[in-house]
Image (tube, rainbow, N blue to C red; front, side):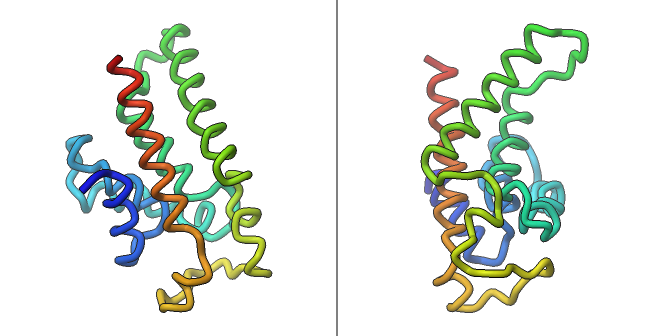
Length: 149
């Protein structure tokens, strides 16, 4: 199973978008699944239900930080290179889905609740979020291939 499939599977099993993306990469990152899910748990629903940045995007950026991020705070070259990666990932996501803002991505649903909704067949039928987590995971895999080339 590839990362996109794993992210979709995690999402449809009840994970938030951010948890699904980070959880899909947990093994690769040396994280226990529980730790990965807890790390990403604040970012679902566009950051705690505020409908801001899409959880798939924040999950994607958490994975990018763990894979290619910098810890040498004074190293401007590494920081600049990482920010370029972040912008590239975000722009690619936007080109696929038009936005990175949860409320814009789900505008067709009308007014969105801030609290989580029960995961029902109607929930999954109405929300395109499974595609968002697949895109985020696939973009990370593409970047990984490019980094190795």
